[in-house]
Image 1 (cartoon, rainbow, N blue to C red):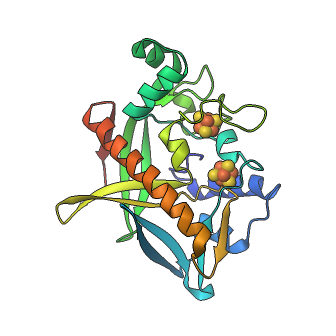
Image 2: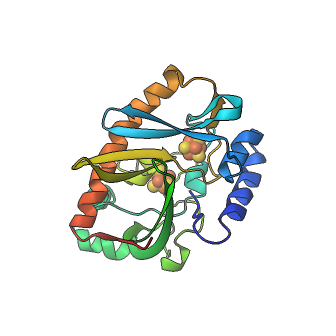
Length: 248
Ligand code: SF4
Ligand code: SF4
């Protein structure tokens, strides 16, 4: 979940993959996909419940890129967490979970505001969307400040057994990973899309010639989380708890 925006995005992903390769076997095709080296890609779209998933399909090998979580053997997304932006729902849930009676105390002590550039590719037309996001973030270490935002850090809520001490009231972004989502108006209605974050931090990706039942179950489970999270993000922006400025 490291921050890969910026000029040396590919270098950062390569570095993350090198670290990942010390423990996990990363298929060369999957490595190439992370660093954007493959040109034989097709955007395979599959609508599950209210979410349109964009699954990369490698044309020359007739393979899909799929995913399953390897927890408890892996908790890399918690040891290399890049940031924890919060929705209004997250703020309500987590402040209560941490025992705060007063939400403003929670915001003062446990969070900070950060602004960062976000580069994402709209898979439906392959256009690049660059935006600047300003959001309230949960501190991953007790003395975290804006300068740390985007730097991979072990999250303070990860315990010695590899479990999240906030679970199940953890931030929406943690539920979502390794997907990312966006919403857009299509035919006058809001449509939610999702795809994989290929940041080099997750060893759970694999290749298969068909999507298969296991992945279908995951897409079904995640479609609900992704839809709710994306709606929460929209509410967060509307309520003034975050801001997105489109710059390209
Ligand atoms: S890094 Fe990937 S495989 Fe590991 S715990 Fe996170 S989502 Fe699961
Ligand atoms: S809040 Fe929990 S799930 Fe999220 S990064 Fe921290 S330990 Fe992991």
